[in-house]
Length: 237
Length: 122
Image 1 (spheres, helix red, strand yellow):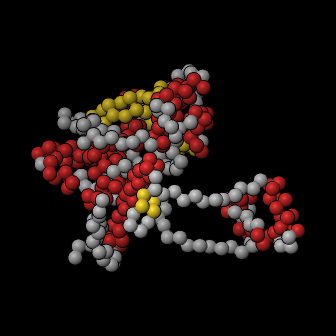
Image 2: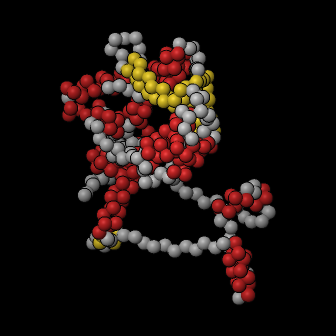
């Protein structure tokens, strides 16, 4: 398995949902938030590539398969809020890197929304802004940019389009190493569990347990999970 | 579809309380998902009658008044001998639009606080 920030983050949030989605290949419905994010990212990418605004928004909308809950106007408004201009940098920069020099090291991949020199930006269509250091996404992307470009410092930012608010940090080697460590520890743990799972499929629920939290609100498997594991909080008699 | 729930024991430690809070999140998410499933059935087949309840849509009525209509209503209320200001009130949304601080608002009215038990994002 090739990992990504979102995969590792999902495992950290709930190993069961990770297993259902990425190991068992269970489909998750495309929510409005997901579709909007996809559309807006495409729209911004197209504007930077030189398309006119309307054309870019239309391509974004098409990218989200014209999701019924997403409108042209909503995409347009968010794309308009991005501080962009044509040809300002490379968009959708793909990376796939081993997390260490070991021949058996797990690999991580990702798409970085915008890279210009040693500066990277990740667009967010979220309603709730947070800090660039609140999770390891930008730290990992910064590490990838440092590896790809051979630079020691990378300026990484999250740009919250709705509020035109940016959370920025200059990642040094120490910051990037912290994010890489987070990723490799989780990836190796998952690799190990997947190995055991292959040998003992009946241990699936012990290896990848349900971990209830506020994230259950957005989990499409919540009802199924409750039926199977509900009342786990009860203190043992 | 039936669920077996064990009897809840008294929560005595912080750890047990955290586990209970997390379990509530799962139960509420499951409940929401089950209601969506039932709603989908009702949308296609009409209300569902259980032994003692009917699951379906309940229509709630509310009114929206434009500024001019509200002004004419206030006049009509006064003509009927009532004080319109005892009936008309400013909603929380309107107060937010005003943007007045509590120090200003306290000159005109009393602050009411209600406590609601819920979870919120950190």
